[in-house]
Image: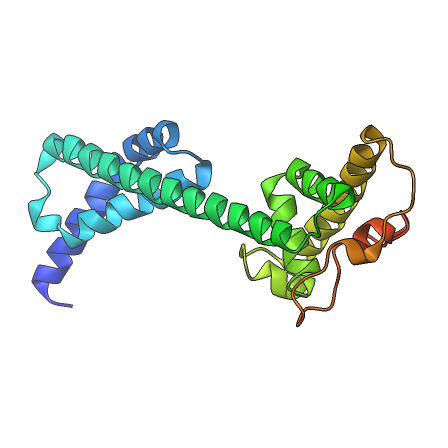
Length: 207
């Protein structure tokens, strides 16, 4: 290790020891989540390392680090907003696509309304399973969660859809059993969503 690298490392270590607590506190109350705060702190000091020659000496480094943290968190918020907007758009498109395959008529309307009553995450996992025929392990790759988490979400989404459909049907004054042919995916997809309603309430949960 050259003397210049040694001096650079020592300066960064001193900077980190002196101001780490301040930056942790700043990011902690400005970031959206604890995870975002941790990521922001790491990004701030990574930036400081890369631009160490631009970091002022002494206490003047503190506002420089605060300004860097502010930009990092602003970028996080923009990224989170874009991600949320994209997620909502895709979820809405998925619901619209599902509705396109619901036959017209009173029973089809019940299905549409039941789908509309589900939370966005429930609709997403349910349609991935029942329309796209993905397994829980494959579904887990979409939001980036463990397979056991996806399995639990799918189990709860199926139950909630079943309950929502029954409530909608009861409100419409209909009592006959649901027909699996009411809603089917495209011709190359074999699992009808209405099979969820027809399943018994003892449908096994996450394993």
